[in-house]
Amino acid sequence: MVSSSEFYTADNSNLETKKLEAASDHYKRGNYSAALRLYFSLLNTSASYKLYYRIGKCFYKMNQIDEAREAFEKSVELESYKNPSYAYLATLCYKNEDLKGAIYNWASVFAYKPEDENVCLNLATSYFSRGMKFQSVYYYEKYLKYASEHGQEYSTIKTSIDKCSQIGNELLQKAKLSISRGDNKSAIELLNFAIKNQPVSFDINYLLGSTYLLEKDNMRSMIYLKQAYCVNKRSAETLQKLASASTNLGDYTTAYCSMKRLLPLVMNNQSEYLKTLQMIKGLESSFDNKSHLGHKEWGDKYFEDNNYHFALIEYENCILLDESNRSIFSEKIERLKRFIHPEEGIIESCMEKGKTSYTKGDYRTSNKYFSKVMLLSEEGSPEYKLAKSRVVNV
Image 1 (cartoon, rainbow, N blue to C red):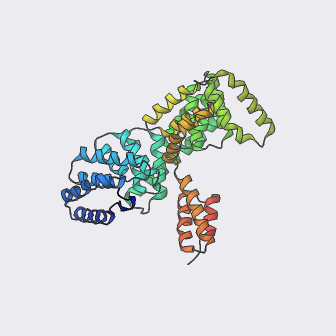
Image 2 (image 1 turned 90 degrees about the horizontal axis):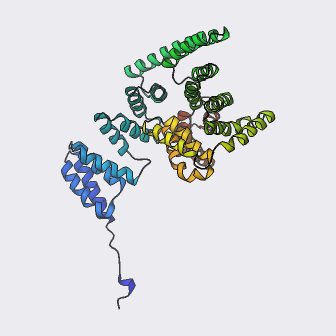
Image 3 (image 1 turned 120 degrees about the vertical axis):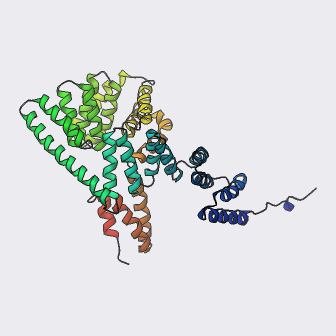
């Protein structure tokens, strides 16, 4: 009998490293076929998302688009978060006039690189091409925030956004005057013009949704109140009116979810808290453990249509209706949150790493993390102020 100690596993890591280096060198010199042969020789022992990414790049350079797409898709199967393959897939989709695919893949890049101005611009442009103004302006504003160089393209976009904002604000003030006179019809006309210029404005969305509610146009009211909620999730009035509009339509599950979202916002107001709690209890009898399926269906439709803001609301509704659904929807919800506002998670992570380095006296490292917090957070926010106070001259 052979002793188990006589068995050994050959360490091929050095050989693999040399192959990767050689393949990289071939790629840099434009010898893509030679690089591919080396990459393919590593698949049996070192298959990884990075290797498929490199294979995809070689095929892309050789204009073998189907093979490139297949390699990039295999790469994202192995790593679905921080993967540069998404950028190539987005480009391939856009070139193939698949705007839905382009948006999904650019959003997947944005999820871990929100400060990349080109990603923001590509998302904004793709949404604009689909006629989705709310999302388009949302990402144009991200682009303006993160652009490092203020060239002609930046100036053109900023001038357009500023002009539209000015028009939107002027129309908003006229609409408020019309409402004060009891002329809701004129106000709605003015606000509909305003929303075309400033689709991401909380004030315009909220007032338009509120005015439609007064006019008993509950379906339109819900659309704009939902958009207002997407812009500002801390507005109790928005959720109260959203609950009213959905109740008027007989959509008691949406009303229930709106009340559940409202509850933590009114905790410091005892009468409002008890009133909201009573409404929640009253609505509980209007649905069963199958009622979330309608919201899942809407969530799937919104997701397919790249309307990630509304998709997020619907998937969250599934959990609000039945907590046992959390395991089913939590992963998709977290992905959607990264599609829309990845800064929150990155800020939290950088803040913790910055504090750790700061405590150790490693100020060069802490400055790096605190500077990123300042870049990603809103100026004047608690996170921005804290990070700024911790930056040290070294």
